[in-house]
Length: 237
Image (cartoon, rainbow, N blue to C red; front, top):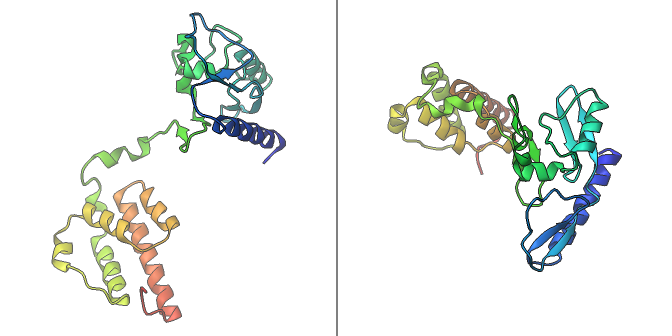
């Protein structure tokens, strides 16, 4: 972790600690405001975010900027121009913050190519338990087509690997049900039930198609069987 990232982590940790200290409605204590309407009155705690005004990195080659939320678009644009690039969408107000533009639809500023401000964001760092990312599922679009790629699965190799696994671990199976199962159901069920580790399970989960998932399952099973033969392992405990 470089110095800028470490300093940012400390600022975020301090902010999270401040947020956790008390409940109730929370407002932001910040250095700029572009609010064009009356703000509702009422008591609220002020979370001081004025320190989060740093552009951390500009990767011109990748087209990515890592920035804190209270950076104004004036400062963000200056940081980008120093690397020969510009933000994908630039609102009309130079003191609007990046966080404000994302949360407030960038006062409806948009780009014909990139859309609204929030549509150009790859990931948000938040103080919740879950990451918030812009995710592209296009690689897995075929998952929505039932039984896609079944004909490409080497069923005999899969059957052989399964039989070897069952024999090595002294297990029985409903072979009548296995023979009747379509390739998609069989491959996915075996992948889910397999006793392998997180890395192997993740590789099967991320396989681009059914054929590749079956091949990974067969390869992992064959390696496991080979290891058992070498070590004299008698099977699952």
